[in-house]
Amino acid sequence: MRLHRRTVLRGMLGGAAVSVGLPTLEIFLNTNGTAYADGGGLPRRFGVWFWGNGILPARWVPTGEGVGDEWQLSDQLAGLAGVKDDITVVSGMDVKTGNAIPHGSGPAGMLSGAPLIVKSGDDYTFRAPSVDQIIAAELGRETRFKSLELGVRPDTGLSFNGPDSKNPPESSPRRLFERVFGEGFRAPGDEPVIDPTLRLRRSVLDAVLGDAARLEGKLGARDKARLEQHLEGVRDLERRIARLEEDPPNLAACVAPAMPAEDYPDVDGRPPLPEINLVMADLMAMALACDQTRVFSYFYTYPVNNILFPGMPAGHHRLTHDEPGEQPQVNGIVKQIIEQLGVFIERLRAVEEGDSTLLDNCAILATSDTGFARNHSLADYPIVIAGTACGALKKGLHYRSPSGENTSKVLLSLVRAMGLRAASFGEDDGMVTEGLGAIEA
Image (tube, rainbow, N blue to C red):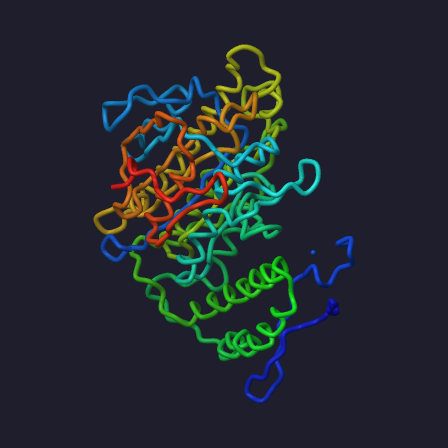
């Protein structure tokens, strides 16, 4: 059967007809396809902090194993010295989902536990939701924003709801500020402003659910998934509308940050990454402290980027392949990146929440798109975890896998640390039913 592309879901509300539009479904196309804790009542938060172009394993892996003084940071991890007691480094783990596309298969396998879908050439999409969205489906119900995605540089991001459904990151500090702390933001203690139209708008989805159920019976599996993703987006909007009518949470650490500059221009062709990172880190810390969201994805750099870093003669990706020998310039770039991860972690730790800190109540997964960048390896994958998710995770630890264990075990432990009752994580060769007990408290 065929449906017209202008088909809408219809229903009645208060005697008036209402409708909700549909996403682009395959059924509309021709055959060629020519579109939200514990810990004293404080919430748990989850985030991904991502950088592109991998590491040098020989300079990444810490020396020694265990806790405290039993291990020491490596050369590339030296930028985390100030937060060593607040992090866990996991090494020796492998992404098991195959390496069909360099720089693409790694993040797909790491963040979703499933192989990617190759569309054409190097164009791909995640086959399964990324871990941030798996957690946001639960934690996001309680906050104004189901999740926030941000980038220090413009790009399309790696947060997926499912196939062909990506959550683009905001790379402008000013626009991120206006979105989170502009219209609609209320600090703890502020009186709610009730818009009389909100109840009507929030009821529209309920009115069209009957029509949606009938439509689902006419759709194939992929179109059903797209329709559900579309309706979940509408539900997300309506949850945000409902939050505007409620009293904000009593989070004493919440202080609206200062408005960022409008622009952060390049200097001699080099973007001011540390300057932008500091502003974005402060915005994200307050977005979490003010309970605007409990889930985020933070992209420092992206796969295959050729950013000119200070003191380097060529772009990052190019150097990973062209610099000979032990690659001291690539090593210098990774060290600069990890120093900025340290800045971000320190900003979260600086926010006090009762007897703990914002960092204590977070679980932050820091990772990249490959292990050894020169050969796009998915072995000995870089994994740093910051925070304890309100005591669910250990800290001050280096765990090294003796057998190249599946990285999905780390992800399952993180999902469970956030309070989700997950029996497994991943699909096919990426699927696991046991977490990594060594990092669990």
